[in-house]
Every structure is written in C-alpha cells, then in structure tokens.
Length: 346
Image (tube, rainbow, N blue to C red; front, side, top):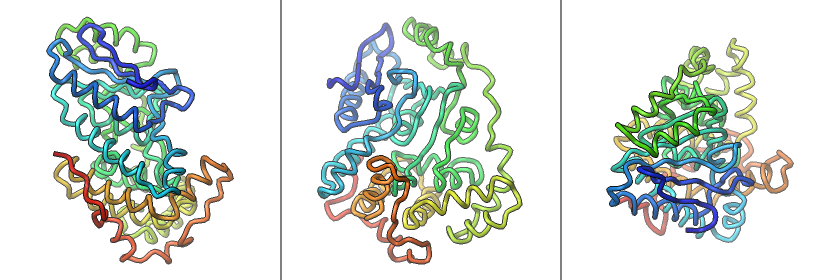
C-alpha cells in the first residue's frame, strides 16, 4: 500500500481510510489501485465480515480526483488519465457488486470520485456535515464514476438540475436523491465504528441503532419548478424556462448554467437522458468512459481546470462559447468508443 490509503483489520471489519487530508483526500491512481487490492483480498477472507470506508481528517471523505494531475496529463496527451479512468470505473463496479456489506461514511465533503467510492456501496451514511455533489461541469467535464446513473434515477428532474448546475446536496437531499441510506450524527461515528468492529448481527442492524431522522431536504420543496424547467429536451429550452420561471431559485440556476461549458452541458444532458434507459451500472460506466475520454481531448477540460484550480481566475474561455455553437453531431461524437477501445468490466 502507498502512503495515501491506510488499510487494516479491526475485528470483523476491514477498514479503508483515504489519507490525504490536506488535499481533501482527493484520489490518485495509486489510491484507486490500493483500495481495489484491499477489497479483492478481503472478499476471500472469511474473518472480514464488513468493509468500512472513511476519510482522514474532519473536512470530508473525498473531494474527487486529483484534477490538477488530470490537467497536466491532459496537456501531455491524456494516456495516464485514461488509465486512471479505467481503473477507477472498474473499482466503482466492484463496489456495487461487492459480496460483503460495504459501509461508506460520507461525512463532510463527498464529491465526484468520492461519490463513486461511496454511493454504490450497500450501506451509505451521511451526517449533518455532509456536502455531496457531482461538480464536473464546473471544470469542463461530465458526471462520471456512475454518477450519471445515480442522477438519472433521482426523483423527477432533480438529477438533471444537480448534474447540469453542479449544485451540492445536503444530507437530506442525498437521502432524497438516492445517494445515501442513513443519517447518523457525526458525534456518533466513533461509537458506530466500534460496534461494527465487535459485530453482532448485521451491519445494517448496527447502523440502525445510531441512525436518526434526517434533516429536511431543501430540494424536496423545489421539485415544482425543477421538474417543470428541466423536463425540456434541450439545454437552450431549460435555460429559457429557468429565466422565465417564477420561483426565486430558478434565475440563479440559469446564471449558474451560463457559467458552464456549453459543450459539456449538452453532453451531460444527453448522458443523463441515455442513462435513464440503462439496465445496469456497468452500462452507465461504459458510456461514461467514452464521454470522459472524449472530454479529455476537448479544449474545455484543460481550460476549466485552469480557471478553477490552476490560475483560479474563475474566468474560463469555453470553445464554443455559446450553446448555439454546439451541434448535435459534436455531442454525438462524445458517445463513440475511444480509438484504443471500450472499457472492459468483465
């Protein structure tokens, strides 16, 4: 194991701790490889009855991939990032079909790749500190790590709103949208982890002893205008409905979309609509791999990361700069298999 993932046995529990707290536990390729190695070993170990994933520090489970590394690799051709995507998505699929209970503690910031490591687990916990999001459109990318399937399966058009705007979810929102199962106050987590290590009964029964009524979900009260606006068939019509909408939150949402990459907005909408028809997570991951590889070669990804993370001027220059400049043919090209082959999930 590398220095960025801590793995050990704690009674009946296999513990995995993402350990880059200064970087909000953002994922490197090596961390993905290490997590997978631990899961594969424990799958065959009868002494391990449950796996628990947490993040070091108090700020969050995982803020996503190391996007500065993606920025630098994309400028050099992107081969390293394509390999990272392949291994990351394979890990997401493994977590979803893991043969033992997989408990993910989504305390604090859990975004992007952090969602991929947690929201496909069998027992998913949020706390009052949880901030859950698929923020990819902020940097000129598209929701991945199985996020397109999660968003597509959220009630009504909530997933479309979250995927396009990159808005964050509270604990209540994450439960409403199917990203989490249980609300546990952060103060109860140490006792919960101790009880899991001394496991009697099922992990779900242990978690149930600590779970409480979740706080209200702000998105539940906004379903009316969200469903009405985001049911449109094009990003242009969505923006028009948001601009004309009477709800006080609609216009700010339109302003958020105006700051996103026009290309990635259209690709995201197409990906979410297609994901609604997918019969499995694996199908969505294959689609996401195609889209992510295409995005890696597109101007807007490097530019988006530059504006948000490298130079931090928050002034990305998208190409094309307007929705009218993105035609259906260019969107469809994102869904073609990469020239070096599709993702293989076994």
